Image (tube, rainbow, N blue to C red; front, side, top):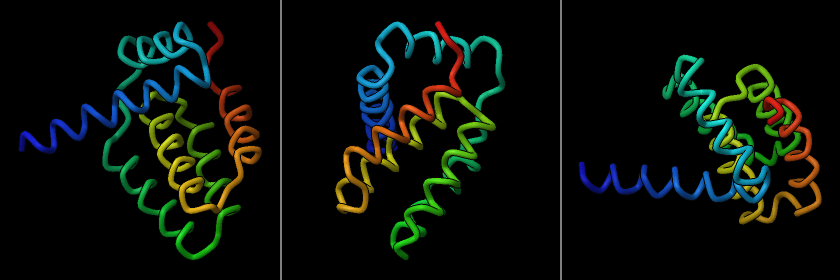
Length: 118
């Protein structure tokens, strides 16, 4: 159990770091605070199912379908958890050489628009 907690902590820290790079520290802090204050937390099962579905699509070579699915999900639920899912997806796609840095940057710019301005 301690291993799982450690991994969850590491993933959360990594996602916050990536988010800080994309959105700036102040923006990220506000995204996380808004979710904690005003919104019910994302259903972890839904987010996990989305992650699995995205990985399956990447494995089958359906990168564009995965990108659209992710963008639709983030547009509907712009939460910190969905940002984490997106960052994990882009990291995985880039490591597998399925997406270029330019494609990832293009998607991140689009996703950034769905989060509240600071």
